[in-house]
Length: 160
Image 1 (cartoon, rainbow, N blue to C red):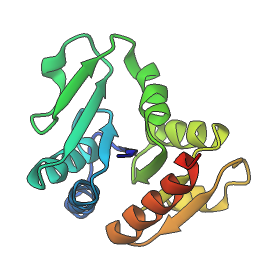
Image 2: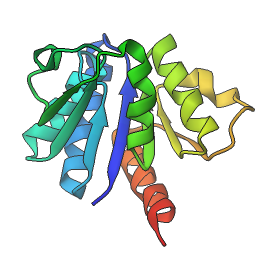
Image 3: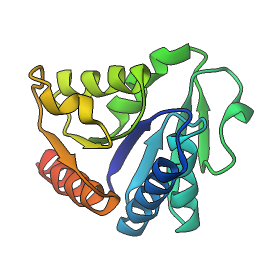
């Protein structure tokens, strides 16, 4: 079993929500455990898709109350450390899928790169020109491609 982190905005348009939801479904079908920030937007959508397929989605929350997590999480981990929890979300996955998002998602994405974590970008045009990456950055056009690349790179990373 592999952990895949999914990062993205706490609010998002319907098209992005559905792409994140499909990403969650596909990750669950593959047997991966999904790690996310546990709140709304992309995080809720990926958790919802994961749950719809009977998978596991763990939300690492910024606050101290587990009830702050979205209703689709399998488990909510309250940290009480605010957005510093973003680093825990990234560290928990073998690979990271970035879907849309703003400055918080960018911070997570750049942290993934500095940690040499494979980063798969869906709806992240701003990262296409990044020259700061120490790890693989793959740009994709669909949830199917995102999951395929994340799993492929995770298998390379987790092999002995």
